[in-house]
Image (cartoon, rainbow, N blue to C red; front, side, top):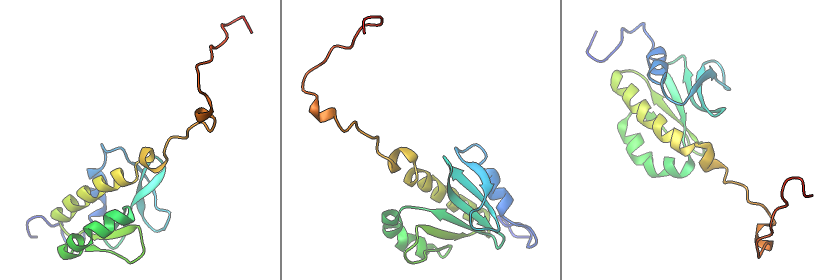
Length: 138
């Protein structure tokens, strides 16, 4: 067994999932079975597959910006027209790469960033402050 690698019969899926135990992610079953997944606020952002690959959901602009470095690593596949990238999990350094990508995925899929707060449609119509009635004086 070489340094930084599991025995050839072992999978990197469980060690990968264990690395995210204290992250703001919820383990669940992948929407695209078979496999496990990690979700952020109910939105799956990581899928683990039985062939020691993980898929990570990133935003298109981020994938486009990082594609040269990701492809140059030799560890990541970037399917065209997809918001998911695939990471090979063959070594401890692959798990570290996965951690970095999942950190980006959390930022890219942050619910606060995905849905801007709704504004009251009548807010621009109010031009002066209207006093609210006091309790019991309706």
